[in-house]
Image 1 (cartoon, one colour):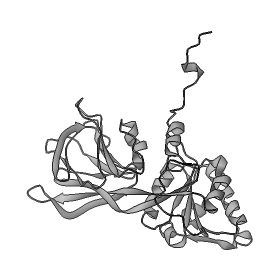
Image 2 (cartoon, helix red, strand yellow; image 1 turned 90 degrees about the vertical axis):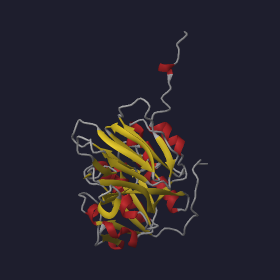
Image 3 (cartoon, rainbow, N blue to C red; image 1 turned 30 degrees about the vertical axis):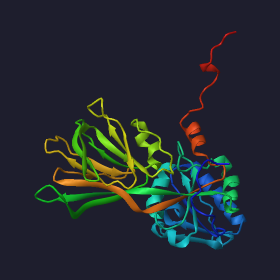
Image 4 (cartoon, rainbow, N blue to C red; image 1 turned 180 degrees about the vertical axis):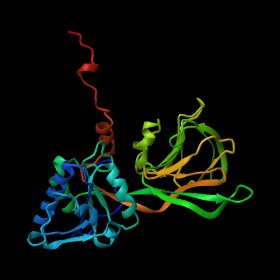
Length: 324
């Protein structure tokens, strides 16, 4: 029995299966072809986005068994599928998140990357785990995303409705110094209340989903994905008293660059292209109005994932005392 809370009821059997993958790795092609063969054998409709369909070596035969294939633009996948399977790493899942968020179409990841916290199906178990899901045996959970906006300030330094840049993150929004070696001088407000002025290399604002990603490497806490919270993790702060801060998921976060700042701060979401943030602007971060549905096989267990992917289970004979 998984410890994970299934906060969505089971659905009708899936019939229109979306298949998405990332080019550049032979292992991805192998898993994509195994997946296509499985779905074809079960006589299910297969919808592939244009980017995946262009991957060399993919077994799509429109003159034979492939008569039930459909190729659609990636942005339209949510309109044509009732379930999407992504073959790749967590980076591939992050790319798909912005497309599938708010579509009410669940997403399952087959891990062909490194860690695989989001893409959690082991490729060696692809056929077994996907078959379980198609038979109706799975966990369906909801993950929230963050929106960030860079807005212009008025003459008094207050944020206006003029949005200069906007993006969405499943993992994190990161304030960083780009290529500069200088720290950033910034001020943080939460729900209108001043929190601190900070000199640091930046600030990571992460969802529970992102707490096991960049925020973790910066010393942030691991937050169970079912908790409604946002984590703020300073990057190399110039004070020993600065610590990660966990706030309610409904929090409204505002960041301003101090007038004495000496470098060009940048802001990015989930590792995507960053945008500049100037001291006459405000960075606003808050919960996105759409969520992403993630589907896990029945064997999924968050703590087991932590143990295996973060090497919590490395205790072995080499760490024990040899008394013989």
